[in-house]
Length: 286
Ligand code: PHE
Ligand code: FE
Image 1 (tube, rainbow, N blue to C red):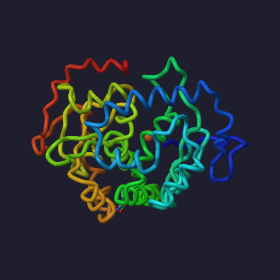
Image 2 (cartoon, helix red, strand yellow):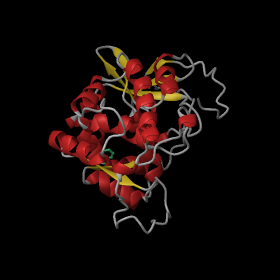
Image 3 (cartoon, protein in one colour):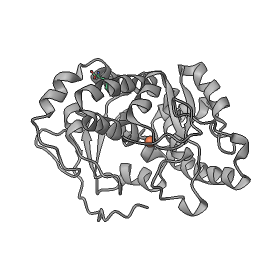
């Protein structure tokens, strides 16, 4: 999400481009397969049930990079969402408008074999493997649409930075409690081999019960694993606390409150694990 981008001439008015599935090389499909194989075993015991169910119901274990047309057909039957290709980052209002209309925008390119662990920009593995399975869950599907509508609304309040933190700490890096155990659902975690283990098992990061205003005040790192993860009780609870709340007074209140550092713990936090923060956080992600 960023502003003042120039639309490539090949993109449509809504910034979409054809995925051009036929043009992927055999090697590109094999990169997907390697990434998929590496994640799937590890995630069986770590990912949320909704994520694992989505992989299954969308047949994402088929070999090769998914064809967005087929994938969209299966997804549309389940929750009314589709996956569309875009050339890279798109302007905020374009991104929100797609979400508000149940279209998930995904990059079409795949990382090189030598970049299995580190990427500067989300590729098709992150966007599709990481994000799309949860869009098959009816409650999470509603949350993502509500987020798009909320984004369009936040533009008018100039509160995008606050709202973006909600996306970051839920959609991208969220943890959920399931039958008493912590599980992964954030796309940035489940598409990363290293962070899938780190987020759940490492003693370094904080794990804190989700609180909307706390999350919206918390800065985040884009250059390393997170220093804090926020844990929701259920997708129903997350949907209720966001879609069913008016954020206008929340944004107003937050204007007068200071931001919170990525590694901070507050007295009022529901601390699940107090991180040692022993990881160096030197900006070296792997
Ligand atoms: N209810 C929020 C508002 O009033 C919109 C929103 C919904 C934001 C879901 C995020 C997620 O702006
Ligand atoms: Fe993402």
